[in-house]
Image (cartoon, rainbow, N blue to C red; front, side, top):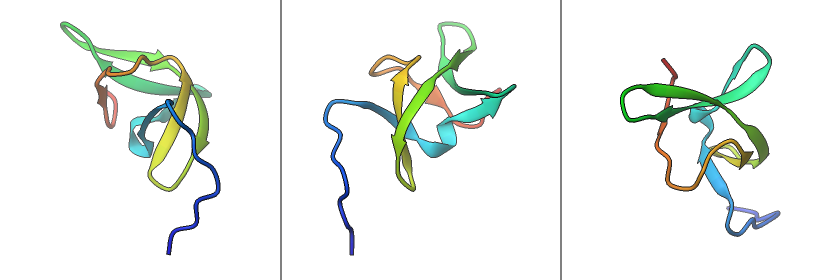
Amino acid sequence: MEIVVETLPSVIQVPMQAVQVREGQSVCYVAGALSTEKRVVVTGAFNTSMVEIKSGLSAGEVQHRGGL
């Protein structure tokens, strides 16, 4: 049974595994033209599988799980 506590329309969200803590900051790794780029992100609401990204990523950017 699923209990919906809150619905967040039109937010950027990524799998929990795509967000890591490095040197005290939340980061995601994004596919660049020639390499993978580390991005500092600000996270928001989350559940057991997904986390909201409030800033640091744009919609449609491809994240790498596990970093470099």
